[in-house]
Image (cartoon, rainbow over all chains, first blue to last red; front, side, top):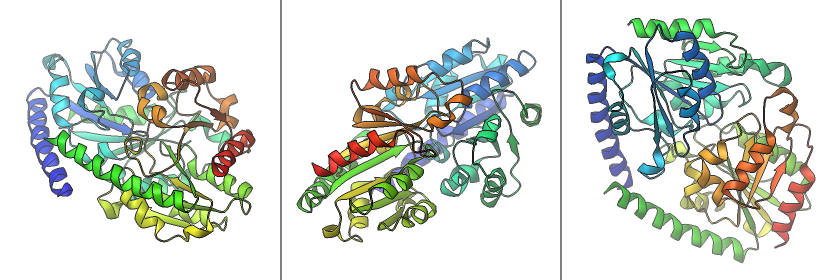
Length: 218
Length: 218
């Protein structure tokens, strides 16, 4: 009974996601869904990414959080249009759903952007299940989170098109087997591109920006 | 409609949780529900905790993960009875529910334990909503996760009885405002005890073990 209801919710979501996808395609917008655990550095990555791609790539951001507008406030400093979604208005949802993205996008001038980045709610589980109409999905994993996360949260790594291994500046201070982490990611998703980088030092950003730019240019 | 169904699921869960709570009380077992983001160090904390409290406090562990038995394998080395729950058998659930705990507990000799620790699925959102029949809840936050997590995931910090600020050994290498983190926790939950500790160096473990022992002794 419960499973049937969940399936229906996902069916409705998929329908709304298809509508989003068509709208974004008509407007020529590349949409990236950025997901991760809380605190892996999504917002810091976006701050640095925006500072490097603006104004060449006209970018807007939709930020999902249960509460607060902290992340939106940080990202708005870049000058990019930012829409904050607080899911506590939707029952404290642990993910962004397609209808939420549709409402948020209505606050943006879709004729004036090339790239829409959605910073999802910090959660390595549920967001992986909800299509929001994006063109690509990326997952951020921080080197402080442990090597086995791809094996423990396989759906997230299976559905994503790229992985960012963030906070590499901390590697000297951790007992972290980076090769094992890379191997675990590829065990779940063979050949997925992995960008080893640090949002703090901006080391490794070039490959990530190249991948992002390639998506935007289609 | 969806909200009503969710409410019904939570009602059923609360009923099962009450049954668990009564069973554990009859057996004189103190039950701790340990929650956090993925990678904050729950398993490492438990490894060190078990090594210090066994065999004086007869402890068993139920470990929740979507996939893998990595954590259970690590914890079983302590000699404590460990039951692994893989939620992918329950539709990839992002939390442990009361009926899952009831099934898992049926694999333990409840007459031979004083303390049952439940290591929940790594997720700072959904597990906070599901009573599993525990006596106390603790949340682990790692200093690599950012200071504002208590404000962004308030329910978790509201429902817990104690917070662990883990990985303090990394503080010298981070731009982390620890006082802000402590302040944010107390803004959500005034007077909640916070244990600043490192599962790596075991610094700060005494206060945590004292709190845990006090719970066990009732």
